[in-house]
Structures are given as C-alpha cells and as structure tokens.
Length: 178
Ligand SMILES: [Zn+2]
View (cartoon, protein in one colour):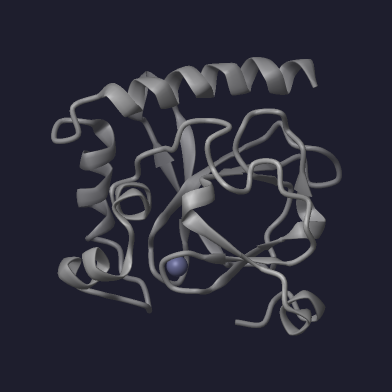
C-alpha cells in the first residue's frame, strides 16, 4: 500500500498541475490531436460529442484531462456491476476487478474482456506513462501502471467521468456483453 500511496500522491500532484495548466497549450491537448489519427469503430463529430457529453466528460474523454482525486463518483464505489464507457457504452471493466488503491480514482486490476481498451505511450508532464483509451470510440479513460495486485500486477487508474456503472442483473451476469 505504501508504494501505491507514493505513486498516487505523485499522480495527484500531476492531476492538480493538469487542472491549472493552460488547456490550449497543455500536453493533453496535444494528445488529443494524435487521437484523430487513430481509427476507432464508433465515431462522432466534435459537435455531436459536445452535444452528448457534459463539459466535464468532454474535457476528460475527448481532451485527455484528469479529474481531481477523490472527486469522482466512483473512486470509493463497491457496488457490483459493470463499468461502461461514458462516451459510447462499451463494457470496459467489472466490479470484481475493482480494488481500493487509495489514490482517489477508480482502480481496476483487469479488463472486462481482452481488447476493450487500447494503450498508448504518454510523455506529458515530463514522465512516461501508458494512456488507456476506449477501443471502441478512442475516448481517454486514464492510465495503466504496473503496480497493481496479483495476478495481473496491473492498476488501471480510470477517471470516474469516463465510465458509467451499470448494476442491472443482465450486465452483471455477462460482463463482456456490449
Ligand atoms: Zn468508448
């Protein structure tokens, strides 16, 4: 737990920096331009994204910003269910893989199914991290780190604003179903 805490503290500092950074010149904005060069099955125009997402969701999902730690709706949620992409509805994570990392963002040790996310190297804020994007729509979800619990050793650190928890029985029983 100590190492989680230290890393999370660092992440929290980075997130705080992100919140105060000039949006136009931020590395996140640069990332977003890279986004457009990748092709994803589920696509919308910028105008459509603006219409269907809240300003906070747009800022995180489409501009790769980060919500403040301990501020999102799911960082401490233990309710059973599946977590869908807030932009396109694809199933990404399940509650069985959610764990308490203490870092203030929802953390998962595993994906709901192989290939639900794509990874991309992210060099913003002067450090190398691995960004996690929804494989269906390309929206920014968060980052993955290699300090998670066994057996995967992974920690998917995800913004609450990027996901929606679905608690209905059909979803809970077949987590990989879209
Ligand atoms: Zn998506």
